[in-house]
Amino acid sequence: MNPYVKLDISDKIGTIEFYHPQSNSLPSIILKKLANMIYSAGQKEEISVIVLKSGGDRTFCAGASFDELMKIENASQGKDFFSGFAHVINASRKCPKLIIGRVQGKAVGGGVGMASATDYCFATKYAEIKLSELAIGIGPFVVGPPIERKIGVSAFSQLAINATKWHSASWAREKGLYAEVFDNVEDMDSSINLLAKKLANSNPESMKSMKKIMWENTDLWDSLLLERAEISGERVLSEFTRKTLLELKNSS
Picture 1 (cartoon, one colour):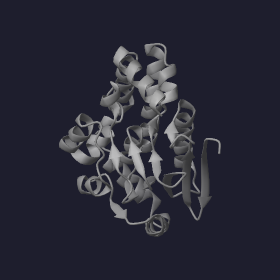
Picture 2: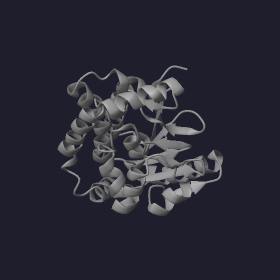
Picture 3: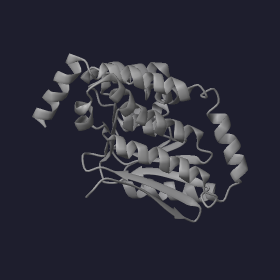
Picture 4: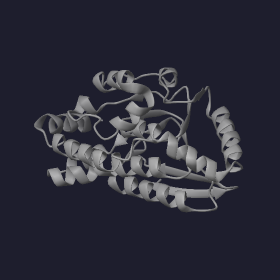
């Protein structure tokens, strides 16, 4: 199946779904489409609430596309790539509609960042998380602010420093990333549909005001996340990162 980003609208609920055959990894084209789709859905009067999900069963998002990381040849290209994550996060936080996250499986790096940028996130018990950036010589610079905002400095530090360790869905719920965790996808989807329908029939102006309040003090992120993207764009050119990415590709 080819990669895609699509929007489905039903009963005032806008469902944005993305997919990539490589464990829902995120190349530039998917990141750009996601940011544009979130912005577009936020402007549509026929949408009152947004559900963000990925295709497939057990992987929500594998984060940055390693294939594209290996093709980066200079700092400018590096910044452009990592800016894609900044645009998705900023589109989510500035979207006037509440965004419900649906995390059916594992989330790595940018996938954790996307989950943290939603306003209310559901998950299954299979939705383990990991910030693997430091292990490949970079660092969770762009996704750091939304994750830290969601789970606090201490929990974020644990994820960022112990970059090869998977943390369980229950751990992520205890820290505040996930609002609810379910044993299976069916129960999760049932609860998502229930909440989405309630919100779809709530006062849109009140939800808009509530969203604005929840994301107070993040206005600087428009520039901050791009500055972080520049740091990531420089680090990805290091000999350490190049060697590590090549080893990972050869072992896969």
